[in-house]
Amino acid sequence: MTATNQARARAQDTFRRLRLIHTDAHCELDHVNPFQLLVATVLSAQTTDVLVNQITPKLFARWPDARSLAAAPVAEVSAVLRERLGMFNQKGKNIVGLAKKLAEKHGGEVPRTLAELVELPGVGRKTANVVLGVAFGRPEGVVVDTHVQRLAQRLGWTTETKPEKIEPALCALFPPEDWNMVSLVLIFHGRRVCFAKKPACAACGVNDACPSAFAAENVGRKPPKKRPAVVIEAPKKKATAKKVATKKAATKKAATKKAAAKGKGSRKG
Image (cartoon, rainbow, N blue to C red; front, side, top):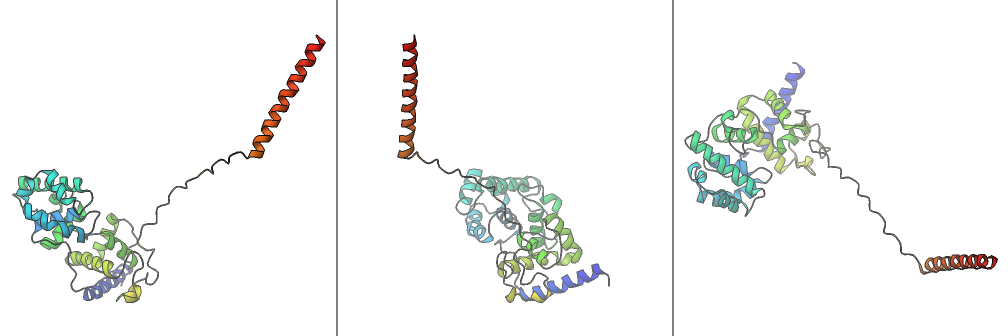
């Protein structure tokens, strides 16, 4: 067996064990159809699924489908999002924009290819593959979010550090039928066991197969940003009474000396 095949076999065995641990692994964004999943995934950028799930019921009660959301004023949509989410203006603009494109180009339905999905406002490769995998069961890659990015490195499945390079590495380890669940299982494990800070290695069911076990905290995480040193100048001390008196005396002495010299010159004349 080649080294590549050995790495693939080890990764697949670890994934099989993780899947048995997280039998309930699923997308945690609440939705009832592909349109709601698409919108919720766009809204989840730079925030948590919990906060998105708090606002989508109100959002979809007012605008339940692509056509109704396409006709909504962006300001009104953003006002609803503002109750729970940051970047609400941009996100409001994105979801109204994507709804308009769905209504105009796709009959109000969510397209089923990555190429078509990434043409929608606010939709990148990661969001597109979430929808393709969860809603349609046909992803065109592995979704690499912050948890997948971190765990793929900790588990030794890749030495790459950037999502765009981690994705093909994972796709090479697993067959396409596993791509969706690889992401969902790693996200579940990352949220419940393999935390970014203080990962619970002792409680991890695959710590015997993890090369980072019990030393994982700094693996798969961005190094802390170095802040430029701030130089604070010490405030200038006020002259003491003694220094002031000395300065005055010196000034007076100089003036007396000058006056004496002037008087001497006058007598000579």
